[in-house]
Length: 357
Image (cartoon, rainbow, N blue to C red; front, side, top):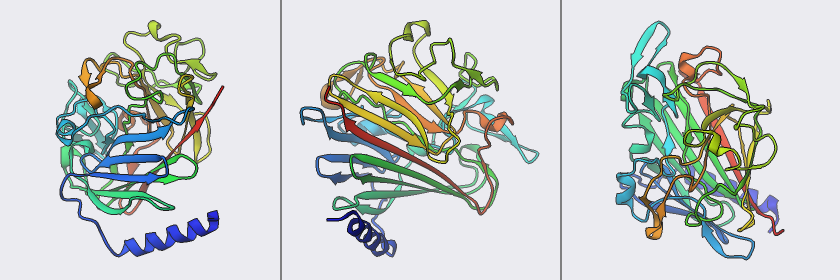
């Protein structure tokens, strides 16, 4: 079937579903599948719970860390696969000032707020509004209404996320949020723990990564940015050329947990490429966000995961594309404020391929 026909079929399905909805009031697991490429999500936290694709020998493997049961996700403290918001990452002092008003948030990491607070978007049940499991354009759209004052944030916000599979071996993620009645910070991301060698293959230190960013936003001991934007040159954070993840990790206290300021000014910009020699899998990440957090699962210690496999530090890496952390308290950072009537949009594309040599 031609790609043109696929597009027409996709448009037909989209318009057919626009007038209907799938109940999302109960917590469930939903799959989207395209041949030997499949993704499963749960509407609890709009979380990605598995990504299955072949390696260079055709063996199918799951390349994200996670759990076997919904109950384990309900008790999860690691944000495995979760959607992060209303503001991903940290806000220093759990407060910010907007239009002359001081907003005090709910702290959940010392004196700071991380990933939206104790009841961030990763800890709520989303509505499944559209779901096409397979066919030429499998996708799922989940929605959530964040009320005014939730975790201290101002204004009602309507949030949408769509996960879609595209040819060949592409996972598209589109975050959207509408500010209904008040200006408010919005910074959506998500937290798959990627190990493209397979979730149970051990650490990622020998995997090769390239990050298309020549600057970082250094932080203090509480991981709150200082406001400075510094070059990566002559630091362990320099991945402008492909390097093994573990090549200089011993120069850091625990591992990587840093925001990179992406270089490209294009709307959809290159973020990172990850390569695992043993499996041959390659993951190419692009996004519209200005930054990306590289996190190397530093505090995943003796966490029992899928199939009883026990995850340890550096058993995965996260590439959380997003606005800069604590942007609400740093005027020199790209603004995260969305005003009423305007729509926040953040697109991410994961392209998987195989390198057989």
